[in-house]
Image (cartoon, rainbow, N blue to C red; front, side, top):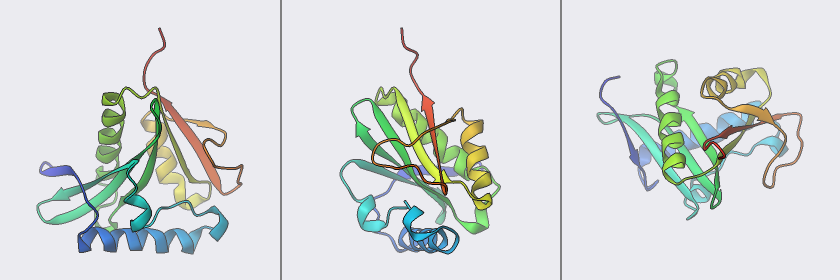
Length: 158
């Protein structure tokens, strides 16, 4: 994966629309409807969200987004790796990119919500490897047995 490129995406391409459709459908297959927090294509075009895709040549490998919660914090959203590219480190590279962007923005903290069911174990393990810790709900989320909430402190307080 030496030629992986991560770039900003305007969400107009067919490949990203297809990957996001697959993502939403999969979330609805494995998660109760009231616990699905995945954003659709239109919601991801919000001005407070920056969206990236990972590519190897013309092949879409995955995606991820950063939603600004306020001037000091953000939320990781829409992390997805295309099925054919799972277990190759794509998600880790996208998450690294998001964390670096949050640091560049001088955020103090990143947050995320992911699933609590076994299908989300690889995602939870990825976030823990990157230093995220478990916490309670944040922003507009409510306590939900199907959700896990995590946070990562970015800047040391002096």
